[in-house]
Each structure stands twice: as structure tokens, then as C-alpha cells.
Image (cartoon, rainbow, N blue to C red; front, side, top):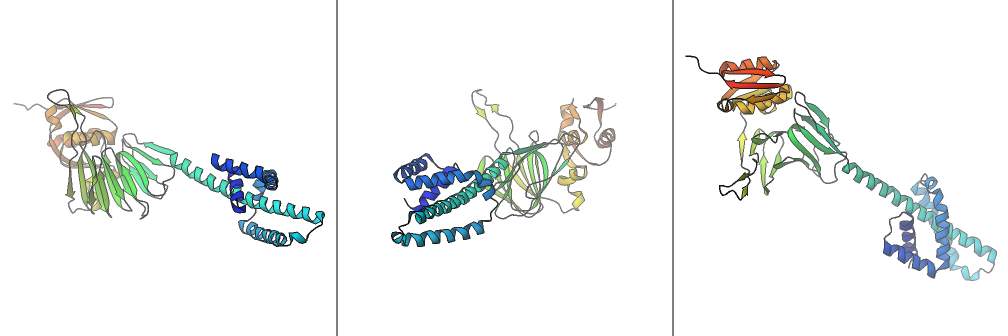
Length: 364
């Protein structure tokens, strides 16, 4: 075993990173060479001052070691001409001290590197879960500087520190993202049925579990969407395009009653109309507004529930499918219902935070 291998094994042993095989190799060597065993004991004794040694600059340690090893090497060449035991004994002390300093430096470096690695792994294991109640929104800044705004009724999960290769977050609900550009670390938004992959861009994702569709709307940059049931199918979106993906419906039995089938994920890409920035309905919620055009009343009702923190119950199935249009801004809940009632007649009654809607019968 060479000197460098011996010192490496000592460093790993003291840093508690050596494998069982490496420890066995070190013990075998120490038994065969008593001088090396004594050097190991000296180094172990000096280990108690390792914390103090950490304050020494690595450059200074390297310089001193070069000088020490040079002296040892020079002395080794002339060792045959030295007969005075009093001169030989200090030489071995120098040798042990030099090896000890080298090992302590390596141990300190290994421990520091290990400490950083463990701290990084621990940070990635620490997950933050943000739940946004109905009636509110929430703004966040990610570890990389990415800005996120979460809509009411959303749950968002992200790590304390992103991984080296990717930046992964999970969304159940709706979020508006301004992603910090990093070509080497794509930003991934995972939802129940799809994953949105970006490098740096501005987009909106609407992925509530109880909605019929999952929407990805791109405003700036470019995104790649991977469908959960078909990871090889990548859909590229360009600015002012929206991807609609059919949300998975609950599993249903076949007519035979034996087999469970799951709805297939279908999708379509829609080009948004050319409108002013404040008239984009997909992001109207950022200003606490609801903008809807020829949408089923039941879909608008879900947005009303999130905005006003209420529960809407339809007592008439025909009312759920009524197509309605309008804009709800700063109105109270009662005023919002009256605005819709102008074009779609219905009756409503309130019981606490529950709103019951029923079809208004035509008068003869």
C-alpha cells in the first residue's frame, strides 16, 4: 500500500465514510506496519483539535505540507548516514506530524463536503404545502426567484431547495407562474393528468380536480406539456395558446358490471382571441374578476364558490347547463347573482354559506 492510499483510508476512517472493505484493508496494513499504526494513533489524538484546524486556510496547509514532505524526502535519501538516535527520533515525529496534518486536512474537507451534501439532501426533502382557502389568493416566491400566484381553493407543494437538474412543483388548483429562466434546470409543474415543462416563461395552469378540463394558457415564451397517460406525447404551446385536457372522470363499470374503465384523456389547442391584457378571461382571477362567455352555469358556479367562499347547490339540472355570459368584478355575492339573473332567470335562497339555485317557472 502506498502512502497516499494509507492517508486516504485514514481520512475516510476518521470521517466515518469508509466502507467495511476499506476498514479491513486499513486494519490489515496497520497490523503489518507498526510505524504506520503509531502514525494513525498520533493522527487520532490530534483529531480532537480538528475544529481548530478548520480555521486554517487550505492554501497555508498545502504550503506547509509541501515543505514537510520535502524535508522527509530529503532525509529519507540520507537516512543511511544518520547514526545518532537522538536525531532520528525527531525525524519520525516530523513524519507523523506531517501525515497527521494532511489527514486532518482531508478529514476536514470530507466532513465539510459531506455536511454540505447532507444539508442539500435534507433541504430537498423538506416540502412546503400551501393551501389557499376559498375567498382568497396567495403570492409566493420560489427558491429560484420564480413568482407564483395561487387562486382560491388551490393546494401547492414545493421543496425547500430545488434539485440540481430540475425544479419540480405540484399543483392542485390554479396558479399563475412567472418562471425564472434557467436552461439547465427546467421548471416542472405536475398536476393530476399532465406535467408542464418550461425553462423560463409566463403561463397559467388551471387544474382543479372537480373541473371538467385542465387548462394551460401560455402568455410569454414556450412550454411543453406531457400528458399523464401518454408521456411520449409532447404538446408545444406558443404565446396566446391554450391547451384544454379532459379531466379524468371517476371510473365506471361496463354494462357487464365486471370491468372498470377510465375515461381517456383528450385534448385540444385553442388560439386565444386578440384582446387587451385585462380582458383575457383565463387570467381575470388575478384581479379578483370572473369573465365568462357562453359557459355552462355549473362551470361559472365553481368560480363563484371560490371567489365568494360559498357552496352552490343546483336544485334544477336544467339550470346547470344554461349558457351564460358576463363579468363579475367587485360586486357582493347577492349583486353577482342579480347580474346573472338578468339574462338567466332563476330563484335563489341562502342558508349560511350555502346558496340554493332553482329554475324560475314561467308565468302564464
